[in-house]
Length: 211
Image (cartoon, rainbow, N blue to C red; front, side):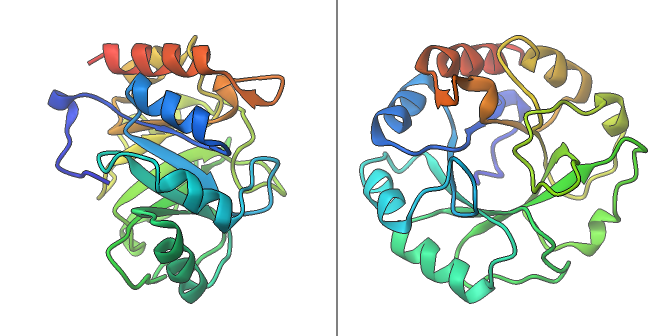
């Protein structure tokens, strides 16, 4: 993750749940800064062979983020090296001191509950925190919006990334309310459960147009 990127150079945008090369290239052309590859159980899950094949055809400027749930550091490092990942996103119950060998940026997913309770972020090793909607029995990817007011004035020691039910219709409002480092979207740029290139283009354009 390019942590030197700041709001003066535009919003960081990640398109998650990439499963094929054509969609990946379309997202890159649209201006996405990062693509997410889900290795956890999901309808968007990819194999390491699929991810490697897609990633080797992507330009260096695009960050390749692997999404994991309760996977051991050794396994994550092995997958990251094999596939050519540049970063990882932890979405499970990984301990605060979870340490990953290698030059990989780590994004910690923080579930946002309706009562607004957020853990002490200073306890966690991470390069950024991604806030997503809490849902019992799920590890992100719910496609549901949380109350953005809950992040108002949040004191985060690392850059803030917002996820959870974002789409082309609401991304600018989310950005104006929270003013995050970046945004992350998956189901919000899909039609009938598949990535929709037109929606990806709209989302990236609208997200980046705010700043």
